Image (cartoon, rainbow, N blue to C red; front, side):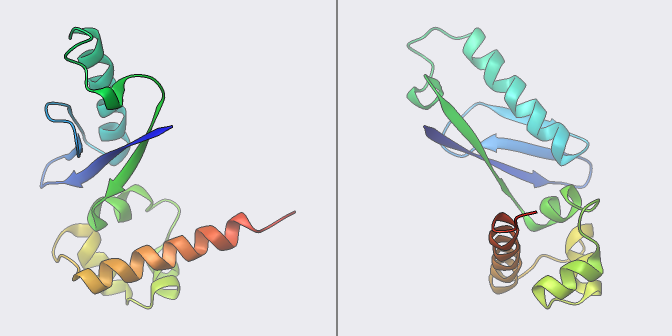
Length: 132
């Protein structure tokens, strides 16, 4: 199955979504979830209002949307699941710094982004091996 990467980012007043390798398909919303829904609707409209020859090969047949977040959007999207103290324990980044990242006051350096990403992926691997 083809994977289509959708980037989710935020500005001062909304969240935006776009497909990395396909120009002209955009979504937006007040929350990351709304931006994700909007891009799905945008894809459907794009396919509905274009001829088959104008539809990119990536959107033909089966495909999976993979969401790539900026740090601010990710922290806001999962704020109901992860507390700042929990993220501090996972990542080693102090809560005040995480708050700066989630509010957009500061942008994390690439090393900090990697630290957050690695910690969340490790948690995901750990959780996937849990049995009840």
